[in-house]
Image (tube, rainbow, N blue to C red; front, side, top):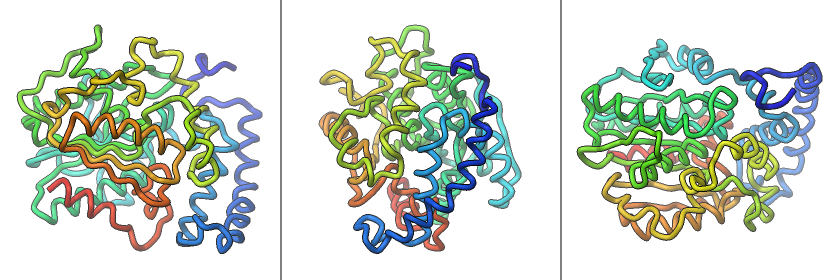
Length: 358
């Protein structure tokens, strides 16, 4: 059964049996990692909850393929509907153009709005801990007088849709919010991994419009963008994919596996939109006239480190309002680390982002 002929989350009989193997094998993988914790320099400084959680994630993505992971997780809407009651919320789903949806975490209309674009390689859905994280950021921002709303964009995933559909849907979301009364300067795009890369697609499209994709004309700059571990390349051949192969939460093979689903849909001439590190010199010139501020994070121990570092150098050369933070010992999407683990202390990052957004 080929990837292109499958429906979302459709798995074979043998893949169903593989899920049973993961259930049986995960405790062993987690136990072995915890036993080695005192002797591993990276794990030694982490809580046991964090080590256990990362071991579980790493084991799952090493033995399951994307179809199986879709089956386990379900679509983003179902993840949101299941998560909302645990956060004391009633689901509020708003259909918008391009067959996309905004999943509201707060009342819809406040002074400003955060639009969260989830990661997952354009293949996997949003996950509960990222929703918890951005709700915490929004709550802290509002405690500081921010008057902010939060919406999660549910964009279409492979195999339902391919590039540039998620880009079209993100543009539709921004236009919808402007039509609803938000000013561009009160809209903040926040995302991780592929979601962060999707934000870069929007910025690239404004600078270099793609034929067949609706143009996005803004009356003023967007307020800000937060890019957590942006997925700036679909390749896995930079040095950090080797040096950080055993320190990142995801193995190099997982990045390559997800990339294999979307590479065929990207024309050679449009690679800079999807793989920002491959953009020619000067590609982002003028981006400081599109978004006021940008916050980029990269983990020193993640596979994408070298590619993100290169992209960040090029980006900050043309946007002096961009902040880049290299997190020592950080893995992919490091700011989520304590939330993934379920640690009682949620860590510094929700507060740092809230302070930056005020």
